[in-house]
Amino acid sequence: MQRTDEECPNCHAVRHFGPTRRETVLSALIGVTGAPAISLLIIRPSYWTAIVAVVGLLGGFYVAHSRHASDRWLRNPR
Image 1 (cartoon, rainbow, N blue to C red):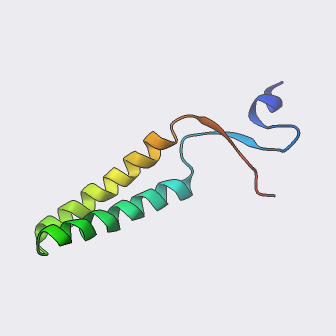
Image 2 (image 1 turned 45 degrees about the vertical axis):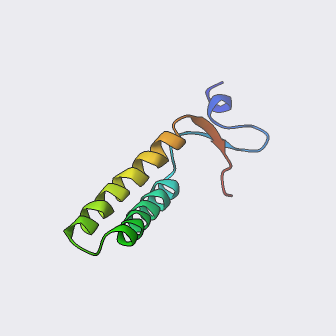
């Protein structure tokens, strides 16, 4: 019974909780590049740009984990 709870017997999809590594890295990269790019439109480059980049990185990580914070079925790439 445990196998049917964790893997679909028909399509072999696997139950997964939270974001995958790819989703986390993609969101963090979007945050670390997008936030400083927007801040550069508002202010000139300074040490604040680095701070905004760190905040964007953490924001992207948070978005990935809040967006995918549930059980979902992901296909197993075979």
